[in-house]
Amino acid sequence: MSDRITIFDTTLRDGEQAPGFSMTFDQKIQMAKQLERLGVDVIEAGFPIASEGDFESVKQISKELKKTTIAGLARTTQKDIDRAWDALKYAKHPRIHTFVATSDIHLEHKLKKSRDEVLAMAVEAVKYAKNLCDEVEFSAEDAVRSDIQFLCQVIEAVIDAGAKVVNIPDTVGYSIPVEFGEIIRTITEKVPNIHKAVISVHCHNDLGLGVANSLAAIQNGARQVECTINGIGERAGNASLEEFVMVLRTRKSLLDLDCNINTREIYRSSQLLSNLTGIKVQRNKAIVGENAFAHEAGIHQDGMLKNPQTYEIMTPESVGISESSLVLGKHSGRHALTKRYKELGYELSKSELDKAYQTFTHLADKKKLVYDADLIAIVRDEISKIPEAYLMESVQVLSGSHLTPTATVRLKINDEVYEDSAIGDGPVDAACKAIDRITNISGKLVHYSIQAVTIGKDAMGEVLIKLEHENRQYNGQAASTDVIEASAKAYLSAVNRIIYTKGLVPTQEENIEQP
Image (cartoon, rainbow, N blue to C red; front, side, top):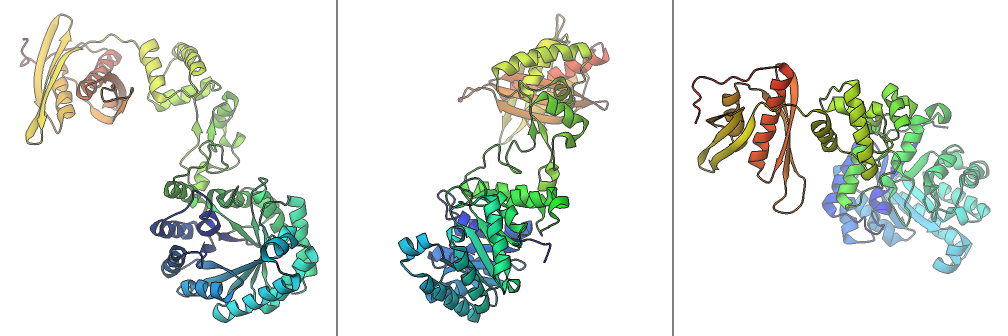
């Protein structure tokens, strides 16, 4: 038996037909191309008979994708199968996927047919599809609630009719792993020609067991798993592709099974689907959720800083996420706070850190999360109250679409006031150059950001900068309703920090006139 699991992705069929997850024609093409980059073996591109849009998207995906098998769903009628083939015939690797229910509850209430009638429908459909397409998959809808002897009888018959893949769906997510594993094992033991086909499973997540049941199935002989990105699909969704694949990878020593998925494309695939549908995954979603590689508890953060394996069983990079994050909140410890301050460019002494940590814990009790701006404010307001060599008196700028940006700055030092002007690429650049001329200190602006700290048209704009001077970076911050003024004050704040840190005595050029 093969040790490789075929990944059959039905995001564009079962996933897309769930309420809220509909995609346009162009969006389906875009998602299909990403699924091919992800490395899925089979893409179920749609249900061609369902609508003209579904037909056209399956047809276009069949034309554009070259490596992946493209499947189209069809009921056990010639009309459905013909429609599916009309869309799939352009694919380099086409597959017709036909299905009919086999449980007594479906036969009685939905199909209103006998077992013999359903058996004949299944065989006839597979034979007809086989005449059109070499690769045919048959699904026994609601297999889990079917009589096991009848289910085995149907499977044997469709394999004789030409089916290369037989799918055992848990259509309503009713089964539990021990039971589902037993169903798959019974099929491998009772169906005499099962070696001629691949056993597939399609597990829904109504009881939250879609992935668990899929794992039980492959441990008992299934070699294809049908799943979706982010676990989307009818009702509670399907087995999640990213969860199933990362179980294979993370527990390979136990399962000894593999697949063709490029796991570094998992997060990108998840994000693309969320962006296309407008529905994001919950924060605590395994593998791709916002909290999947985030740590707030102090004990966890301490362990992560010492060795990530203490609290992470896989690396974020392995699924395409750049790095783990240490979230600062009321459960965080000193190690995480120290690390974040270093990342922000602050080297705090023990006494400074003690003071910062005390202020941080008080703030964290009031807020759910503490952001970088809060940490910078703690340092600025509680720790690093440095003497300001220069005070901003005024800044005036002249700028326009046909004017060279010019700034005039007035700074005060002790009781002396100095003024100078400069031109620049923009009003902020001009103001910074004017400050350089007055202070005789210049640096390279390596970071500049501005964000609103309140709401409305009169919002305060907070400017954060990093200024590099003689191979060291200095932070500057200021806020104002005038973003040019805030930018100039933030730049001056960094210059004052340079003067204080280096113990410089401010001097002015001789050509600067005192007003």
